[in-house]
Length: 440
Image 1 (cartoon, one colour):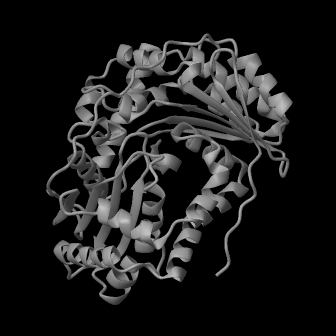
Image 2 (image 1 turned 180 degrees about the vertical axis):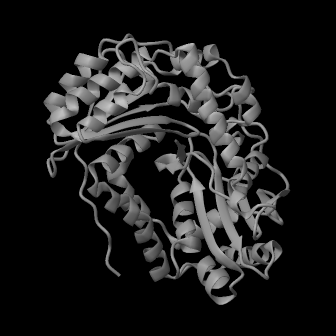
């Protein structure tokens, strides 16, 4: 089996006098440039009663500044033939503009204005809060999203990770303009942000633009630390979610360590062994052979604080969630006592790396990868990651499965279907996921 290889990214690091980190990647393969801003704020940073404030602040960033009217930014970027968007996650909020490289200065200038001078006009806040509330109401019609939210909430009893990124509807309904503005002023300071410029630009031009537009902002106080730690789970938890749905679903979560822990990459590869494609163990047995499920997924959620490992099973008609759950545990127990074969391990490593490596053919995706890994750990892990993944052993896979995927460490959330009153109501909720678990 061939080994997937990747060219090393020649990422240049600079710091502005105000503490902002600037990361630059020259890529002259196409006349395009990506300008991204990553802010270290997300659901993790929200005090009780303010869930969803980071997501709402993200929306407000597109509602104008003292220099721009609402929607001006999007219209300008699109007029240049570019595109823009943003997303909020549990640890970060990210913004991007993807433009012809001849317009990179304009993209940097506009983002700098937004990051420092967002207007937060009261009428704009109220209208945008209504937009977010509508997202939340749409999400209530999605039983699968409800299961994910309930599974995460049941897994985290203390840590803010247990709250939905878009927030609890009661919190968002009561949120004030001042609460959102205070969040903006606390976290949107240059020493808590990263600027990434990737594409058909020179390092000299990129750092000159960064200094010209972002260097004007003063360094702010360091944002408050997140002090709450999730207590160790000492017994299995079970939750039933009764919603209008056609078929059952089961989601199983286990607590895992924070990003940077040496056990995280073995868990990533383990997820590929379990559910990475049609030949993976869960798919082969539960979907193809026994036909208990229509689909299965497995992934660890890497976060700044300890996260979760998820397995989800969409149950087939004529079968039960209990059957699916039992079959999952049988496969896991086998993995705990029998080492995987060399070929299976290499295939899983290649599958994990393929998305990471092939995605870098896009200049925009390169920017996302740089921003995500630097906000999570450090950008220099990008060039080391392929070798780190290929060096994982079958013993590390077994050790990780035995250490984390235990009965006392798991939470089981089951969708119990209720007959739909109006089948058309069963629709996907608003938002959607972006890289890094972010919502937009």
